[in-house]
Length: 129
Ligand SMILES: [Fe+2]
Ligand SMILES: [Fe+2]
Image 1 (cartoon, rainbow, N blue to C red):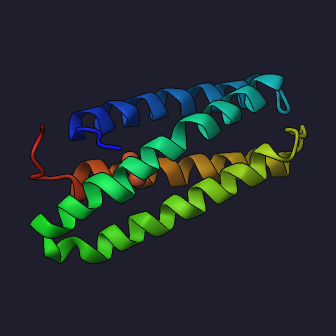
Image 2: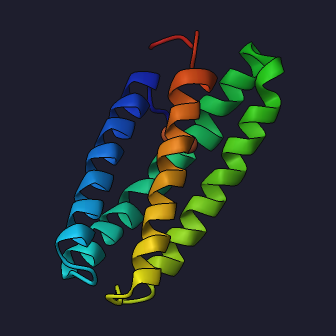
Image 3: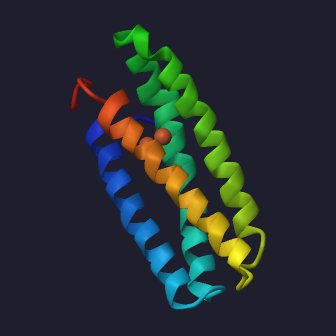
């Protein structure tokens, strides 16, 4: 599925907003049902975004910028890790434990750092269609 670079960047903004909601829900009430709701939103939204990068943008980028191949490979591996961890977290029924909250925060940090590398490094100089 083709998505423009601009669309992918907009989806990153939406992801930041959704992560803000996730962490705010955790702060209000560990184990809040809202946590589960937001995790399910991510489960619905992320596969399309990831596929658009892995199968659409990244192959174009790797042709235009062969020197970015290692970073692209790192991003592809992080996609798998991000989604696998999300599935694990979503399967745990949001227990109100310190451990669960800590793992949500670690996942959120991973997603934000991933998007920072895409926005600030990998996508630099790419054509906006
Ligand atoms: Fe990505
Ligand atoms: Fe992305």
